[in-house]
Amino acid sequence: MSEERSDMSEDEDGGGGVEQKERWGPSQGGGGCGSAKSRGGVWTDPPPPFSDQVLENVLENVLQFLVCRRDRNAASLVCRSWCRAEAQTRGELFIGNCYAVSPRRATDRFRRVRSVVLKGKPRFADFSLVPLGWGAHFSPWASAMAAAYPWLERICLKRMSIADDDLSLLAFSFPFFKDLTLICCDGFGTHGLAVIAEKCRHLRVLDLIEAYLEEEEEDQVVDWVSKFPQTTTSLETLGFDCVVSTVNFEALEALVARSPALRQLRVNHHVTVDQLFRLMVRAPQLTHLGTGSFGPPAALALQGDVMEHEADLVSAFAASKSIISLSGFRDVASQYLPAIYPVCANLTTLNCSFAEITADELKPVIHHCHNLQKFWVLDTVRDEGLQAVAATCKDLQELRVFPLNATEDSEGFVSDVGLAAISQGCRRLRSILYFCQQMTNKAVITMSKNCQELVVFRLCIMGRHLPDHLTKEPMDEGFGAIVMNCKKLTRLAVSGLLTDKAFAYIGKYGKSIRTLSVAFAGDSDVGLRYVLEGCPKLQKLEIRDSPFGDPALLSGIHQYYNMRFLWMNSCKLSIRGCNDVAQRLPRLVVEVIRDRPEADDETVEKLYMYRSLAGPRNDAPPFVKIL
Image 1 (cartoon, rainbow, N blue to C red):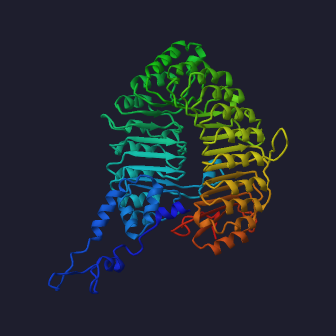
Image 2 (image 1 turned 120 degrees about the vertical axis):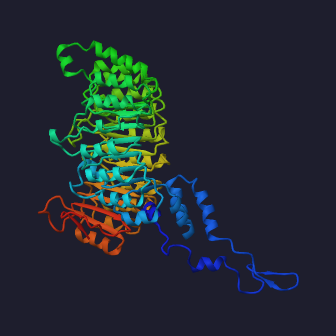
Image 3 (image 1 turned 180 degrees about the vertical axis):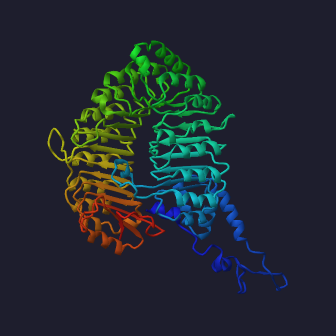
C-alpha cells in the first residue's frame, strides 16, 4: 500500500499558503536576514524575495529527469511544493488498483498525463476465482480521462472490464492517441476494435494480450482490420492472437504491406502457415512474430501435399534476419518446426506455451538457441526437454513451465529432475514459474545455491499438501533455502506440504519480498503471523485453500495500510474477524465475496482487502458485501 499512498499523496491546501509566504518574506525585526542597512545607518527596503514560483520552475525542470515511478513517489512526499511540482511533471500515471482512488481525484491532481497504466481485478481472476461481474469497470475512468487528458497518447489496462462504448469514447476523445494495450481484459468485441482502428489515425500499438472478447454471432462480427487507414500507417505493434473470430486476411496482408514501421506482429489461430508466409514476405523487418496455426492447412493435409508450403516457410524465415522473438505455434505440426531453424541463433525469446510438443521435437530447435533469455513451454517436453534447455541456454533469465492439465490430480510431466537440471545449467536465471506434481527439497536447495540472482521464484506443486516425494518430509527446507540464499527475491509463490517452519523462514529472511502467493499450504495461524510481522516490504499477499483463520488475519493489523491488497479464499475466516479488521482500519475496504447465495452468513468464502482513498466503491454487485 505504500506505493499507492505515494502515487496518490496530495497537496491538501492547494499550495502557497501563509507559512510559505512568511518564510520567504522580509523580516519585520531589525538586523534580520531579510533586511538591509545603508552606510548612513538608514534602513532600506530589502531585495525582493526569491519567488516560490521560480523555485518550483527549477524543481520541475529537475524532476523531468526522474523516470522511475518509485523515485517520483518519494519526491512527492518531501513537502507540498515538491508534491505539486511532481504532479505537474508526471507524464505517466500508474494505478495498481482501480478502486484505490477515484478517477476524479487522480485527474484533478495529475493534469499533464500522457500515459495511463490501470489495473483492475485481483490476480486470482486468472484462475476463475473472482466471480463474473465482480467489477473493475473502465467506464468511469474513460469518462474522467476523456474530460481531463485531451492529449493522452497511451493506455495500458490489465484485468479491466471494457465496453465497446469505452473504446469508442477513447477513439473520439484523444486525437493524438498512439498506444492501446489490453491485458487479460474482457467485455469488448470487434465493434470496439473497429472504432479504434478507424478513428485513431496515429495508432502505433494495438496489443491484445490474453484478452477475452465478447462472444459474437457470425453476422455481428465486424471486419475491424479493414478499418485501418488505407494510407501508410504508423503501426509498430499489432497483436491479436487472443481474438477467436476470423479476420479478413486480404485486409490484414494489405495493412502489413503499408506499415513499414511494423516490428511486432502476433496473429490468431485462423491464420494458416501459407498466409503466415505471405505476411513475412510483406514484412521482413519484423523483430517479434507470433505465428497462428503452425500446421498444414486442412485441405493440404488431406491431400498429403505439404512439401511446397514447408519450403516457402523455410525461405521466409531465412529471409527474416531481424526476428529475436517467436511465439504462437498453435496446432503445431512437427514437420514445420525445422522452418524456424534459420532464426533460432538470434532468438532471445521463445514462447511455446501453446504448443503441445515433446522433448524429441523440442531438442532440435533448442539446440540452435544459444542466446535465449526468455523461454515459456508446456510440461509436455518433460524433464528430458528441460535438460536440453539447461545444456544449451546458458544465458537464460526467465523460464515458465506451464501444465498441459492444470487439475490437482493430473499426471504432471516435469519434476525435481527438470528443476535441478535448469539450476545447474542456467545460473543466470532471474525468474522461474514451475508447475509440477513431484518435487524434492534437494532440488529446490540446489536451485537456491546455483541461481542466487533469482528475483522471482514461483513453484506450484499442483496436488494438495504434497511432501518431498522421496523423503516424504515437508518442503520447509527447500523454500527456506530460497529465501536465505536468494537475497534479491521480491516475488515468491509457495505450495506443497509446508509447516509453520517454512513461514518462519520467510518472515526471518524474506525482507525484500513484495508479492507472496500461498496455495494449499500452511500449518496454523502462527505461520501467517510470521510473514505479516517479518516481511516489511510486503505489498501483495494472495492465499488460497490454506488453514489460516481470524487470529492470523488480525496479526497483520499493523501492516495492511502499507499493502496494496490481501486476498484470501477457502481459508478459515469468519465474518466476525473480518468485521473486526474493518472497524479497526476504517480506511481499508474489506470485501466479502460469496459464490453461492445460500452460503452460511458466518462463513467467509473469499476476502479481498485493499486501501482506498475513495472509500467503499459504489458498483459492488449483490454477491459482494463491503463491511
